[in-house]
Amino acid sequence: MLVVHPSQLEMPVKPTRTLRDLPMPPLDPRVGRVTGQAMQMRADHHGLIHETLRTCGDYGRLRLFWAEAIVIASPEGAKCVLQTDAANYNKNNMGYREVARVLGDGLFTSDGDQWRDNRVVLQPFFTRKTLAHYGEKMRKHSEDLAGSIPEGPVDLAEETVALTLRILGDCIFDEDFEPYVPLMLEEFGTVLRIVNERVVNHVPLVDTLNVLRERTFQASLGRFNDAVQELVDKALADPDRAASQTSVIHALHANEATRDPKNVRDQVITMMFAGHETSAVALQWIFHTLATQPEWREKVEAEIDAAEGFDELPVLERVIQETLRLYPPVWIVTRRIEDDVVIDGIEVKKGTLILVSIFTIHRNPKYWDDPDRFDPDRFLPERTKDHVKGQYLPFGMGKRACVGSRMAMLELKTIVATLLREVRFDLAPGSAMHIESSLTLRPEGAEMICTRRQRGPS
Image 1 (cartoon, rainbow, N blue to C red):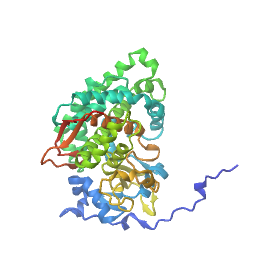
Image 2 (cartoon, rainbow, N blue to C red):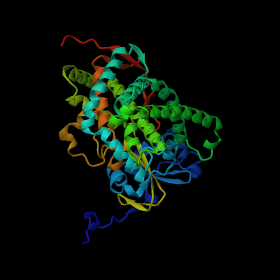
Image 3 (tube, helix red, strand yellow):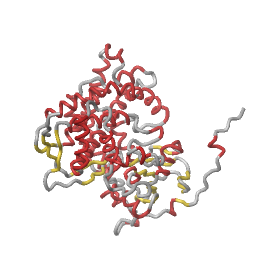
Image 4 (cartoon, rainbow, N blue to C red):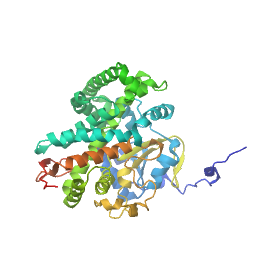
């Protein structure tokens, strides 16, 4: 019997425009006929892509030297690319190739059967049942930091990276990551900085001439890979832990489809990156934002002080959600089209670069009132019921959505609540924050001051 899926009964979407019909921001001064907007992208790619919303609307066109790109600032367009027609798009673009130099064929960079096999193995580490065992570990590490962080100027980036690494090691790897923290801060930090420079400041042929930078990259990557291999070998040499399957290393090694040594290493590196980088950046944004929103900080502190546990903290949850709206750490998703497609009525040709700007979707005035204003009450239930699919994407959407999104939200809530019971972070006088758009969206330039909270008797 022939079975027809309901989607096959729908009339195909007829394109009403082509990519060339879309507006585009001004070309680069003087050299734009050759470079398009590539020099603006090199100088401030986040600013250029966000400016495309203002000048072009939901869809805009860019030309980066000879490469054509479409910038998507529409929930419907994001849904087409990331969910409805996801099979028509791949990760075969320069950005992912650069990241793959570090992460290999990990969950973030791979496609097809390899991605699916690894996702199946890793998914059980992020279920609701599993997360119930992580909360206490997160709280313990957070309390350790709250009790030891000194008053005065604080490097919030370093502290949050170290904390999220310790939590990651304890929860996902069943391992004390303390010995690896300096390595991640130094070697992995160097590697990511160089990858970011190559992705953001890319000029064809020029990158290949920077021999000194490449030597630095390879040296740091080598030392980091050696440490990861030591971590893997140590875990696999422990038969008791291998039998208990409490580490992703053992779970990957136990499955015939994922036990290849290179695959295990690639997944471990990816988990180390994705499991701490985005959470650390989100924490930095939350504390920076609360430092500039005293009314909301007082509300959060009052809620935390009155709570016996961290299960029900609705004000803090809304503050986290609103911060992730304004400053999504994963602020852009890139894809390349495998075959000619129609995106929300726009005909786009094979090979075109797709830039789904989550940051811009989150600030699109068609979907958010006064979008640049910090307003956690946007996430009250009565106001979110009218949200459209694709309007809020801090963890992506579709089958490639972040596997650890539930763990990330639990981690953010636990860390913020634990720290704010004991300390407060303020901007240093005269300090100003600006957005640094690297692989993740980071707060830069603001010096933070830590002080102990003086609480009255409960």
